[in-house]
Image (cartoon, rainbow, N blue to C red; front, side, top):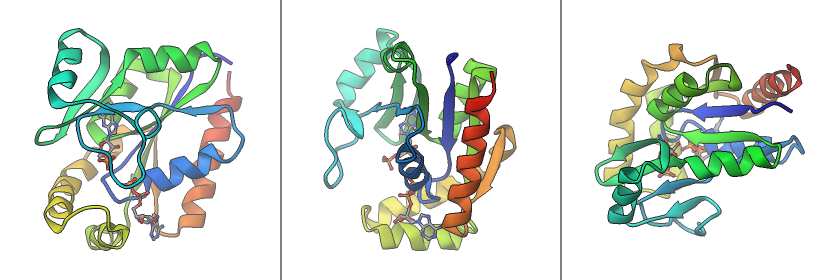
Length: 189
Ligand code: ADP
Ligand code: 5GP
């Protein structure tokens, strides 16, 4: 397979991780791009699995060293970024990379990789529903939830820059729409 990547972006709480996990269980030749972050591990998260956990200083040093293909300070002092080494690692194995990145990161990756990339924007049914999902998920404080919600309306304005928009209202429908977009892209030479 030629070098390919699937980019999944959305405001926090819209369902990116759920859709990425669904795709990874389908037995497709996809491999998750593990990002680096300076935020602390949440719940059962393990270094090297969900993220490479770095301190803010380590993260800034690696920015200076030119180790990232893209990075964002997604929330104050919380850096997230894709290491060049991660992309090389996955392509070397002949797999298609799947990214779960914030909306600006998704736009940047698509601009860098062009037709090697299929970019999907996961649209929440509404801001209210987004807040409900984040509250139900129970992984963030109410302050952090409000921070994520404030960002969401700005991010939704960038949806038009993605190849495909998937509205995640009914989860089963969103899963099958996502899966058919991805399998179509993988088949294409
Ligand atoms: P993200 O990765 O975009 O932050 P998650 O995948 O963690 O979002 O989803 C946020 C929460 O919403 C999770 O608790 C998830 O189980 C739930 N969720 C995802 N999709 C739906 C949906 N279509 N309807 C209701 N709840 C959903
Ligand atoms: P969380 O803290 O919920 O794991 O992630 C916060 C946000 O950072 C999510 O929108 C997630 O997609 C994004 N993110 C994770 N990794 C990267 C990355 O490598 N680059 C960018 N730009 N955003 C990322």
